Image (cartoon, rainbow, N blue to C red; front, side, top):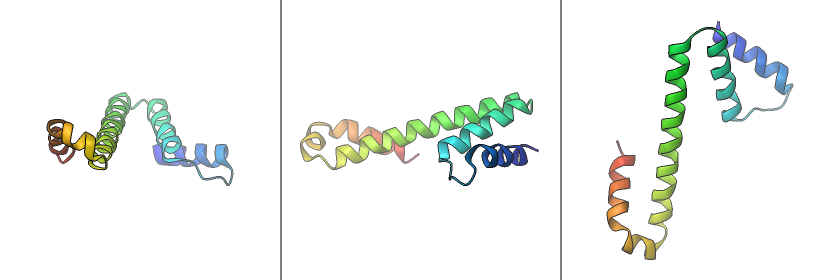
Length: 87
């Protein structure tokens, strides 16, 4: 089972240290491939990429919200990002 393989890999590799979320996700991805779950692996990779894009957009939106000068000149961009991020 994938979850057990991931837990074993993480336990062996990190030995008492706490892995980052990225490291855990990388291990999951590798074990999905190793388990021959190609379609699931591809979907997982696409999902990770989409979430990363969403985090970047939210960070940009936060930056624009905290910058009055950019907020005034970038209102259209801000509105677009606000709509996109809230989907």
